[in-house]
Length: 311
Picture 1 (spheres, helix red, strand yellow):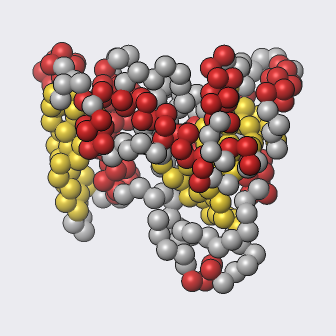
Picture 2 (picture 1 turned 90 degrees about the vertical axis):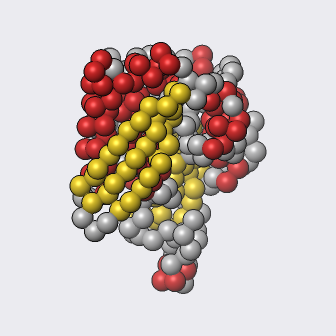
């Protein structure tokens, strides 16, 4: 983390806190964090378990600075090392948080929501901090009166500080949620410069933008058996040169990623380059290779080597 800025450190009226964002996979955590921060700090796709790392998104507004901790989705029966590590990372984030934000879909509560909430509340420090509940995708609820049923059911699950219906994709209700979060931030100096939006490096962000395209363009099983490793990174005043390896577990997966006559890999690289050039605000030269690493997602050594450490 960056050191405190001297100007903020002398202001007793500032507020700062870590806000841990939790919920089951694919409930909209990353979309909401990106909207609250006002910048893309987490990749998104329609597939569950897109987020693998804890990613910090920093939002500064006047005297308030909130560091939103976007976490992997909490899910039951995590069998592989990768999935177990992701879930442990999510739960471990609670112990350093000042405010909890739990997400469920406004379109309906699932059995998994109840199970996830119970597990979260067993985490160290969970019961000692305020919790807000965000009802995501609430614009899809028909008729609107059903939102009252959801809110009533949620109220029986947990003693929330507030329950907020919203649609992060459209920005509806997000400012209401932001105001509630700010009310619960403890007094203290800001920990990040005002213009900083994430604690992650540009190389990390680059690898995630490539992986985002894998999640979006590949079939059901293959994306979860892929990882991206940055092999070369060279940035000049006018251009960035990147070389990256896409890791898969089997030769058959490699063939799928490459596609007929290399067309799938070209598409992944082309669309990733658009995001990379927006990230770096300059031209990007990108080279991609696909490499087989058998059973990497069930290897503690391989998972650690990719920076996915147990929280």
